[in-house]
Image (cartoon, rainbow, N blue to C red):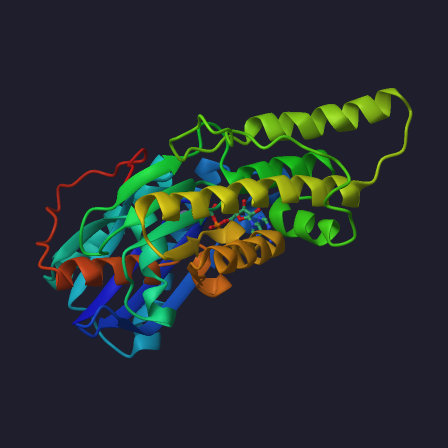
Length: 338
Ligand code: KG4
Ligand code: ZN
């Protein structure tokens, strides 16, 4: 069975094609992505209207490129991200996927973007045991319990304010490092001292039993620090601020992910989302998982960011588990949880 996945929830138009092997794994046949990230740079963040327009222009050429790369005329099933994401951006991918599924007369599957981020790991690392997943990107910060990719996923926690990647982008802007800020801040942090400034770790107290996150206090704290230094006419080190901020985010994310895995009683942690490219999140996750006897699985960076392969892979798992197709009348759901 060959499945095509279409992704358009944020600023990436992704079309992936996989072959389901029937054993919890897929082979990758095509992975085409067109990104509008450059068009958002001058605004300092993703502009929904600009993203929708870019999807509209890119969707059909990206689908055609994926079919050519896979060497097929049409897949056996077509899946699309139904949510969560930007309303107008989702609409473009969903409308295109419905139209192609109807024209090709093949089953149509509306799937959840978050599950896709977890499922994509099976392409590189094989079938997934019961695990906890930590998703960190510009749009989401989630801790999930995934018992089986073919079954419903349980949300253990999410951010109560900013997403982790969003905090990186906002702090990078504050420090004049550009957009997307995550990679620039990571690079600046390499020259800094991560213990220079003790920025707050939100929602890490013993009473925070749910596995939620909060990053807006941290972001404000960085802003206050810079303001106070400027007011006092004192010099400050951007690398030290970047390294100390990055340490606070990585500390909270990895500490809570390991805590969640222990609470749920699983010994595998999967990372996903664009911000898992962060060098300190990776190294601290490796260190803490090793200490806790947890196996850490991180897909390669290309598959961590939004793409169509993850949607095809999740749909293949659902179909393999006996899920029936979705109605073509299904609506997008920008606020979808798991
Ligand atoms: O998954 P993604 O490509 O798109 C979505 O937001 O869905 O993730 C992009 C996010 C941006 O916020 C970007 O700043 C962040 O991931 N990011 C990083 C790094 N590379 C990308 N954040 C911290 N450190 C990085 N090295
Ligand atoms: Zn995503």
